[in-house]
Image (cartoon, rainbow, N blue to C red; front, top):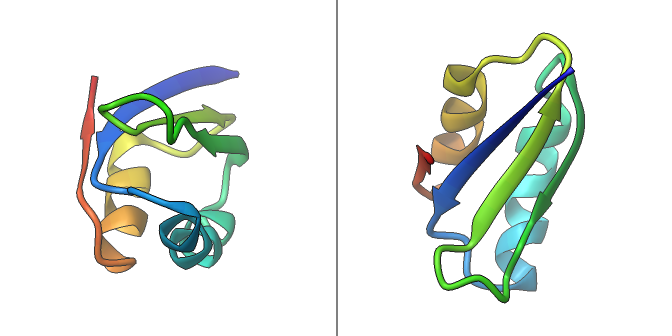
Length: 69
């Protein structure tokens, strides 16, 4: 299992609700969480097969930006 971290433009619970279906459909993601208290809104993804490109694509499709840190 690999842990990926991304700086995102996700800002609130409604944003998390928007990205949820996009991240949940990515094959290989075991768990993900967004730290809304962190100023960089860090998205942590535990993956067993999904790549950073898969995660960035899902976030982009939801209308947000993600940059691996």
